[in-house]
Image (tube, rainbow, N blue to C red; front, side, top):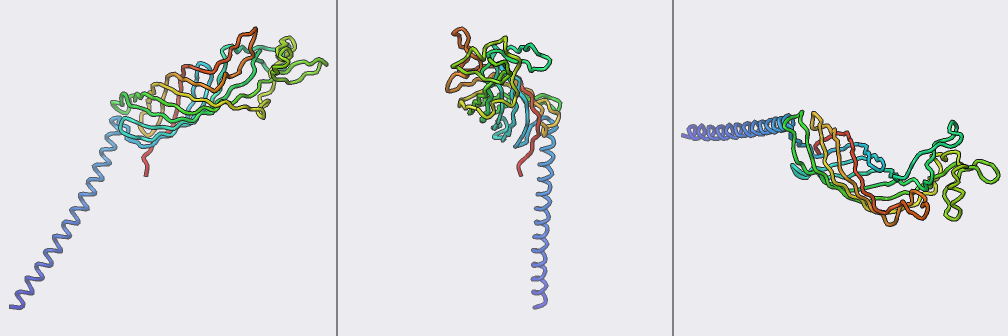
Amino acid sequence: MKKIYLILFLASVSGGLFAQSTTTQQSKKSDKEQRKLKRISIFREQEEGENVFQRDFSLGGRLNTDGWSGFVELGYRKTRKKVNYFQFEFAEKKSNKEVKESGDYSFTQRPFIYGKQNNFYQAKLGIGQRYLIGGKANKNGVEVDGIYYGGLSIGLLKPYYVNTEDDSGENVDIKYDPSNPDKFLAKEKINGAGGFGKGWGELSVVPGLHGRLGLRFDWAHFNEVVSALEVGVNAEIYTKKIPIMVPVNGADPNKQFFFNGYVSIQFGKRWNKR
């Protein structure tokens, strides 16, 4: 009788262990299948044009109707349709009154801009959002996003130098002096522009704000690559008028608020966070 009980006990234990082993193997198999299905789903989304990447980084250049800029951008996906991004940009703004001219010795001197008082550069830092308007139907399609963006702008004024002939007949580099404007504006004595390195030690800062609205078109064949063209409008305002040009005949060509159109191109990559 004891032998029968022992046999039944061992059979019960072995049956339980076998069932547990089978359940564990099925669980592992199920987890493996789920991971496989997830990879297939991600691959299918990429092939069908669905952008599933959570991060992106790109470098680009922008041509404005009143200047140029270069920028770096870092994006963080918030939802399927929204990406928040940070951007740092360095730009130069020019006046529509600027005209390059040549001095009497144009073969040895740099062309100059008559009446230019300062070069105006900007260091901009801002945050924006891209909103998906139309995704790619496939990997050969074009993704269209609306963008809205704003931030701080640090205006940098660098004095503009010209090489001119002083009263003693010597050639000297001078900048605009409000107390003696005639010396700077004596066009017949200007030989050419001063060197690009002139004035960097005399920078003055003008803080401001900037904003942007536009459309971005990303045509990259693979979603892990950023290849985008953007068009839109910029607006900037500073705490005072920006003296790019010297006032002539009582008319001040300088302004405090700037509005322009732009087109930009950028390239980079996307990835998922670990």
